[in-house]
Length: 282
Image 1 (cartoon, rainbow, N blue to C red):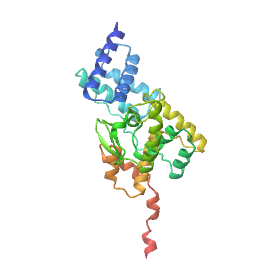
Image 2 (cartoon, helix red, strand yellow):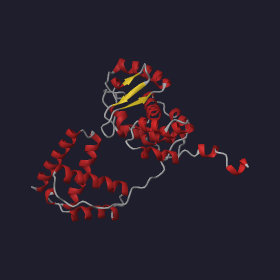
Image 3 (cartoon, one colour):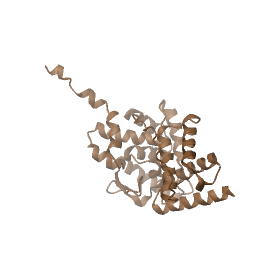
Image 4 (cartoon, rainbow, N blue to C red):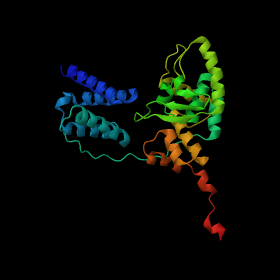
C-alpha cells in the first residue's frame, strides 16, 4: 500500500515539475533520486524525518562513494520535494562538502580534427562538429529542431536550455555548408523536425552519440575519455585561446553565473606561457 502511495506522490511531483518548466532530463533525474531514496527508507515518503535523510546521505557517502557534487544534487532534490512540493516543516539544514572545482579535461584542436576524420558516417561527423563549434549541451543538441536555426545568418537558438533560458549560438560557415548537403539527402528519404534524427526521423538518444564518440576516439587513437561535454569544454577553451571576452563565452555556454565560466581560465595555460617574465625585461 505504501508503494502505491509513494508512486502516486512521485508522479504528482513530476507533474508539478513539468508545470514549473523543468526540463525532461531534470524531471527524470529528480524522480530517479527520489525513487532511490524511497527504496532506501522503505516507508511512506510523507512520514520521513530529517534523520532518515541524514542516514541516506551518509549511506551514499560511506557505502557507495558518491561524490560531494552528487550528494549536493540529491539534497537539493529532497529539499525541493519536501519544502516546495509537500511544504513539510522538515529540518534540512544539512551541511555537505562543497563540490570541488576540478579543471575540465579538454581536447586539443589536433585531437578534434583526428576525431572528426576518424568518423565516416556523415550525420555523426556533423554532430561532432556541431557540439564542438557551438558548445551546446547534449540534451540541447538532441532537442534542437530545424526551425531553431537560421542557416542564412549562421545563428541558432537554444530553446529553454538549462535553467529554462533561451540563448543564441553561432554556427560555423563550413558546418552550415556541409549540413545543407546532408539535409537535402536526408529529406529525400525521411523528413524530420529534428536537427539530427534516426532513420525513422525520430530524435536520437544520448547513448547513440556516446557510443559513436567512443568508437571514433578509439579509431583516432585518443586516450582521453571523449564525451559531448568534453567537446563543450573544448569549445570554451578554444574561444579563450582566441581572446574572446569571457562574458561572451558565458552567454554562448548559457552559464547563469560567470564563476562557472571562470574555470576555463585555469585550462588556458598557453596564454600564460606567452607572458614575458619581468626578470627578462631587466
